[in-house]
Length: 426
Image (cartoon, rainbow, N blue to C red; front, side, top):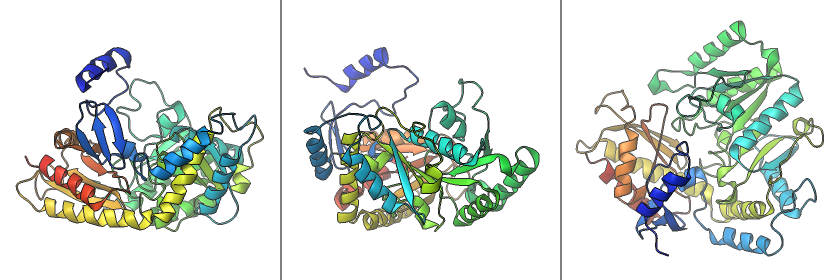
């Protein structure tokens, strides 16, 4: 039966709630590495990667082979009932990669939000405290607790009632938005003086590079001071690596750029090459504070996803994807910098990023400092017309982000960058 994008769009409207948004009116029929074909047969370069899920590309041969082998053995038994080798092997591999000293433990789950929820549960169990500090612009999920941690009301919180108590937010430092590290630390001092004793805080959670918030990197100075304060007050530091993990920033984990060691770390997205898998990696003494039965989930650490993740780790190492991320980032930023100097394109600025986690802002006017509020959406729509899947983000809808698979060739990367150039032609 032949179907089209138009046919499926009508069926989608009748079958799927309005609250599940889709950025483009396209329906995928197949994908390969950094390319997608829709139901109408049109080809697109993929600069979204399933929202940072496909660092090793669509259907990497190593991942596909690992999945097929696991499918031939068994698909599900539930680790809480009968354990299995892929879960243990993946936990061992992740423990060895943990960016902190000492013994590590890994809990495997299914989604990024589930990982964040469990990291907070573990922190509360280990400290006997309830308070959690997060940051404006941060994104940690859409469940009740992770929605409270997320530092943006629209569209993630509006209409869902009062957030889960015990969560507090600090301003995230973004110098070109007028917020410096000193402002963040001053706000923390005020919070401790007015609302919350540090002895009541279980954890501080932060993204090493904010995802939905606009690809702003957490300054090393801030991370170092948070580490110092956590050590002084018995607070646990959680690095949310759901979007930054697995080579995207040119390191296995984004926090490694700072040299700061977290106590707990949440991972998901690109860990399993497109299969749903997440985890919490933490210091052993902290992870073991939860009693047996307190952690888990029916599908947590699916054997198929674990097999895929083991293959992903092999691909990252064997194909040199840490270095490739840096090379992609340099190539993209050089091209974007050249675009920013052109008067025949929409004004862009604040080009930034670690490794291949690259972003830029649509500006109100050339040479100005004001961003174009909600200016990125129109560019992503024009990019689709030019054959490129592109994502917007930012607290004001001003940012274009690039999440091209790290396995993309230079030719495909350049093709996508050329499409951005055409989309910026006003």
